[in-house]
Amino acid sequence: QVQLVESGGGLVQAGGSLRLSCAASGRSFSGTRMNWYRRFSGKDREFVAGISWDGGSADYANSVKGRFTISRVDAKNTVDLYLQMTSLKPEDSAIYYCNALGPGGFWGQGTQVTVSS
Image (spheres, rainbow, N blue to C red):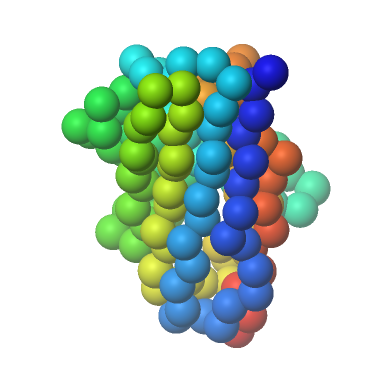
């Protein structure tokens, strides 16, 4: 059974930092691109950051470039995916989701990030 479980969300003041984690298990994720998405209240999910299967390349939404860093640690049948978020802004407040294999793939349940001004 595939599971993606996010953690690390919470309430932080503007300018602060948070580190989100996602534990992916239940199948081999080697060779799999992993992503973070977020959803603002009442809106569709939007792409935040993605990392290649080997961690060798990453890309970011323009709104988070230079502030967020995605990384991964792979084991035999698990992946630990991270999103280091710095210089947080109130407009970063959203539910953040871990994803494997893109929109048609696997999703976690989400973790709430709230940035107060």
